[in-house]
Image (cartoon, rainbow, N blue to C red):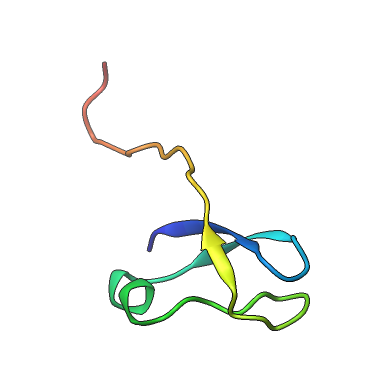
Length: 54
């Protein structure tokens, strides 16, 4: 399940949310501190896990 990073537009708190692809497409998560849905997704790096060794 992917992890997404957000920043709340109301209280400015950064937080992460683990959402499925369909959950991510449906609606934005609520801020865990203030409950606002005025959140912006932040750019984040990701690390793919593969079975091959480089």
